[in-house]
Length: 130
Image (cartoon, rainbow, N blue to C red; front, top):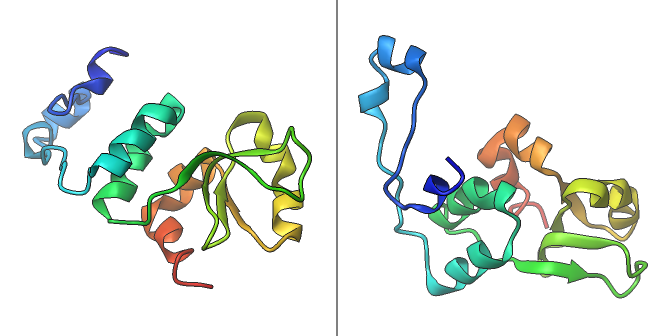
């Protein structure tokens, strides 16, 4: 399955999806928002973010910087993704422990758990609040 995640037209579904008739109603993954800039981000970012990155690209969100270090934070505090202009950071793994440091500097912080639990509408709304 790890190899198949990189195919643009590959989709999988659970047996319960098939029983409920939803398996074949799935829409193919859109590639409309995948620009060259977004392709570069997809290649550099951690694999656990690939699905949400494609959703961000499809929503035409601004392209983030990958592996961003803030000048006012210690060198070991790194955002996996950052939108410096919007002051939004996605912290992955142990970096989530630095969330309060980013927030003290006025940044909005999200983790992969936030993205899964709150969804892309919530994350997109962060760009509306300057």
